[in-house]
Image 1 (cartoon, one colour):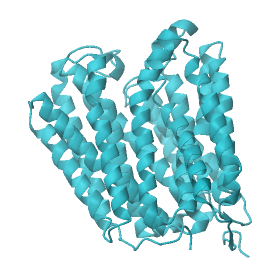
Image 2: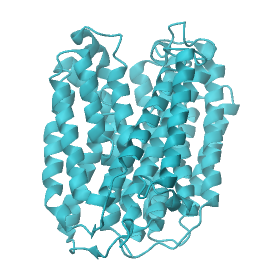
Image 3: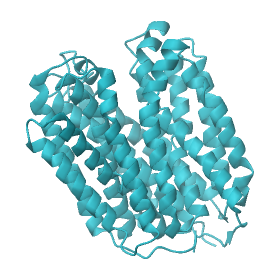
Length: 485
């Protein structure tokens, strides 16, 4: 049998108790990864003071993002070859080991390296959680489980900064990392035995090591360009141009490797499927735009409207609640309606109208502004359940982990690009060389930046329009009634 051809699936019937235990465990694993992207932010000033190094403080966040983004596709491929259980347990273990190293870090360099290790573990947890649900539940019922994933992200976005600030001020900043130990152990225990009952596609396997190295190198250099450009170095500086050229070469080499490898890390033929390609691109544009708005709306509140940091955080709640409600509605509709694509088409259209209004109208009453942001996030909430389930419904069982991980990888990569673009728009003419960054910009009211933020909302509207276009192109295939056929 060909190395890429899956053999018959071996499965053990999962009881409702098994499904509940596994689902709770993978939600904990997902929370670990999502929370660690937000909980550190408010504790960073305290960490910098105690470790005596403020200059390299941004790398505490950057190292985690670099590592977690780069390895996400590897987790998907590895789980397709070796099974979800062993892959998930490896991810949790690496993440917990990295957390211990972070908590014990004696200096900034050690903390940055430990955060990289954390990212190596956390990078696959979200995609693996979604893939495991796909193994357990039929596509027709899968949408309602995606609702809880949206709730996890909203919880992490709201609770992370609050918990980080509380731990750093009232206890010790290391508690931010120590808390991962009991959560990680519980996730491990809940999933270890029960995941043995998951369907297993037995196959001969060979990891494309060269392809993996090229992907990690291409992703890392590209993320560095986005992280350093316009802040540490001017966008047209030699450092950024050389790094961008190197990244481009590595991406080209990776694509070439995918065409010639016997068993490529990401099989390109799978992505010729219109449903898979359209779902990935529609989801990437929509969710990346949401990431950009979640980062820049608080800065807009503080910089242009003059709100305090706490007021800005509270004003972000409508943006977080809307996405949970939208995801709940579309996820539950998928099991009941034939034309499930209509929900995200209507939802993204609502988001376009809402963000477009903010972009076009120079002065809006604050309650109306919050209402428009709520409507935008309500519309965007419809995207994740439908795009994820539609993609998994179309994916061959032997590539389920790969395509799910690729969707998450695309969301993260597009998110990084959009954040960099929005930052460049706002800081246009004030970036590298002026000492101004997004962090310092948010420190006080500066109404002169209102024009820059208006262009950010224009860019967000265009990104949402791209998402809508790909949803319209996506074929609406009937949802299967079994987890894998």
